[in-house]
Image 1: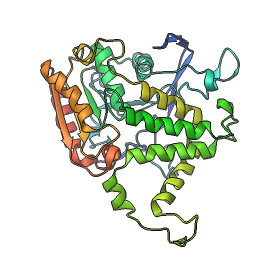
Image 2: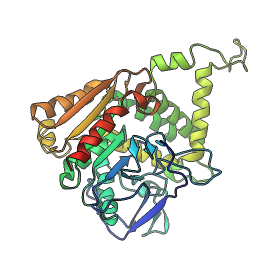
Image 3: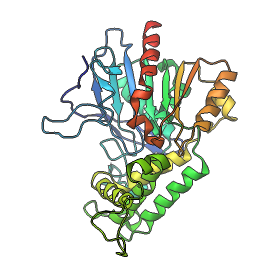
Image 4: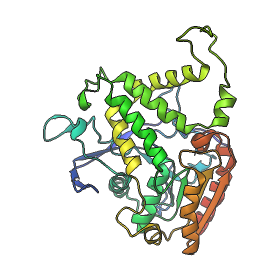
Length: 373
């Protein structure tokens, strides 16, 4: 029988430390928001660490109250009898630093000033996010996780775990990831940034929370959202249908796809902070798995644990060739690597929309990992 993890709560771990960042700056004290599902076994060997994507949070499964209408963002994956079976695994999901969902980020109070960090928050990289997660891993008493799994920015985090914390990482499962975003991906984020910077309400990051740069953030989110879809999925969902509310010759009349982007952009403003959006977008753009190393082969030679990779045929944000470049190097290095190209029409979001196409491979992989101790 499969089921939900039920009612869950987000917890907050406080760390009175100064975390060294890739930029050379220090960040602290730190708070990390996280949720756990299932039970840590006596050997402390059954942890599955779930890493979220760009605007995700620690709430990966279940509901926060009986009245909560929205389940966690990966609820169909986590629970009794599900792919990440909480009868077998202890599942952890932590909100990354730089976010606005409970972990230390631009909206947090700077202890040196008593005011929100805003743009005084340091630029962070994905490697910094994972470095902070090691504090939580230690706090939870977990010496070695069974696997780290995540899609998109979560895939980047999984890879960083395997490369830089091999003694604590038994395996990784990067999904729809990249070793470094392409100029096109960076260009799309540049457009999103400009949409925010050009909103007079942004005020160089010093906006009041109750009066955010809503127009700029909504447009920025729309730009990003387009990159998560595909030509085929947009044709299936919208076609060239014109909104039934508008006349075709109404100058401000909209196609259904326009209304969809507007609706999603406005909803996003209500749930996400603008500066956090900008900081995390910068972290994505800066991501380079070979940062500080002599190229891809040099850094990937450090990945000794088994890895299971997925890419999707219609993903044009992080297209399959980017995953295949990394997998090809790992194979030349004779590392234990498995790769699957999944045929899907849903673009970068395929890993969220059509999990049934690839999750059986995850079950098989985790079964082998658990059997091998």
